[in-house]
Each structure stands twice: as C-alpha cells, then as structure tokens.
Length: 236
Image (cartoon, rainbow, N blue to C red; front, top):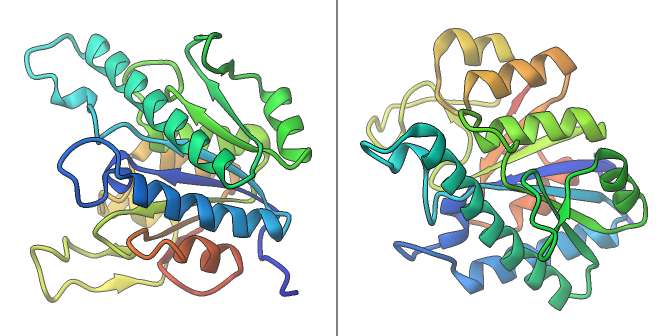
C-alpha cells in the first residue's frame, strides 16, 4: 500500500464547494462524493480534520447595511449547518465523526476543545470544526490556519471551486493567466493574489505550515494531494 505524504491534515471546504451546481444550499451528491474520498484517506490511516465555510447560505459581507458583527455571527451559524450535513454523510459511510463548534451549542455539537479534538483524531475519528473562530471579522481560511497550528496539522488543504491553483490574475477574466506550482507566503502577501486572506497566510507563515490550493470539482483530488501528487499550488 502506498504511504500517504501526510499523517494529519486539515481540509478547508468552502460553502461554494458544497452547493455544487445549485444556486443555494447543499448538493447531497457533492457531499457524498467528498465523504467517500475522506473514507479513502481514513483507510490510509490519515487523521483528517475539516473546516467548513458557510457561503452557500450566508456570507458576513452579504449583509449590506447590517451590523458587521451580527452578519458575521450569522455566517458562523451557516457553517454549522454544513458541518452537520457533512457529519451525516461521513457517518453514513461508516466513519466516526465529531463536530466541534467555536460557539457553544451543546445539543447538536461539542464545544471546541483542542485536547479533545486531538484525542478524537488519534482514535481515528474525523473532526469537523464549525462556527469559524467564534469571533467576527475572521474568515474560515483563518480558522483553518489557526486550528492547523493548534492541533499540529502537517498541511492545510485549501479546496477551491472554479480554480485549480493560484494564478497571477483571475483566470476567468484573463485567458493568459499563469498558474504557479509553488509560492511562498510573502508572495501571497506582497502580490495580493487573493487566494486567501492575509491573516490566514501570516498565521501559516509564522507556524511554518504549508498550504496546498487545488480544485474540488474532481473530488479525487482530495486523495491525490494527500498521497503526494503534484497538483494545484503549494504555498510554503
């Protein structure tokens, strides 16, 4: 059996990735595909944790004229909906899963406790981190970077919809856009490439956590990247 390149990973899934071709909400087929790929990683004894976004339901910046803090808290609640749907799909595939939320809601999920999250991973459970950091003004990209540092993940897997890596300009607007195979964090910050927010990039840079940006349209990419295939863009 081929050995995976990473033992403990954080997979960042955007809300847009979960809605598939729908305009809004959750595409059950997409979630099932993702769950099946995570099951493959589980068979390789990879410790998988997941951070989910909520953009398929609500984004904080969508609340025009709304208090930013209120809008961001609404976005955090949207991530919990996605986390529960993903947990259900994973457990239907026979994978023990725990959802931990940064905002306590004990009736449906555990509160985030770092030591407990690490113990779940060591026991072979998938851990889904929901509700962002629990604070407004922070993105779920930053959540992924923060949780990666806290649980000592080896890599952050940034699964993107509609793009297969980092480009020097928007490939949907510029057909001549060039894809990067490798970048360093200072390039992300200095060139303002927009692949992730500066807080997340700085966190990973300070803690020496690599990020791999890849496309999620082909769900098999989740397995390929963990097995060490050279796809997407690696930030180091």
